[in-house]
Image (cartoon, rainbow, N blue to C red; front, side, top):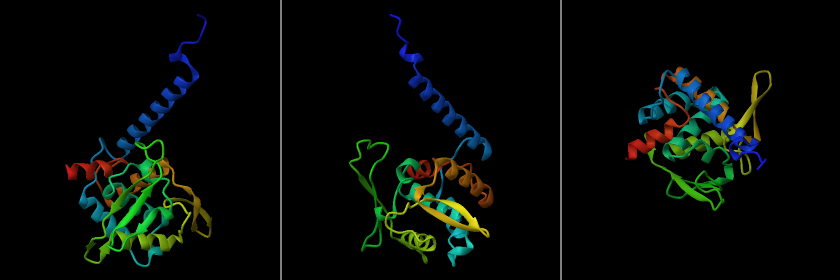
Length: 204
């Protein structure tokens, strides 16, 4: 009696607004890339690697290098953006068998933070391998230990871009980069979730 209805509380109102905002962002992204999202394919991944894995690494924009590595994690690791966004360099372990072990402190399905691991293949495709791309990426950006694996960037001046090593890239920035790459590389109708969807579909 006289109390505010739970469905009209400030908390519920904020949650609804957040959900609507996320939904609208997804619709805008789908419209930007031309319709409903598709799953990323191995062909898409190969195209990304061929276009962005270059020597010396400096001829590829830092944001594009980050994009490539993030897509490998999302596709080959079959992970959500939220699972990998906060990873640090120290969470990677290059194993003797050539594979890479990735430790996640907390994920969407592990809210208590017990931690879990996944592995990225060390198999070589010609002269290209995931560990090789990772080492190329880390070295080119000078990322070590406590640094964010997928850092934010800022312009330092004279067109130089530097990593903000203690801050991870945001979902919005990652989404905008994907939209840009879809156009540049003539990929399918991809969203941030497409890599995980495509990998899961391929494994099914």
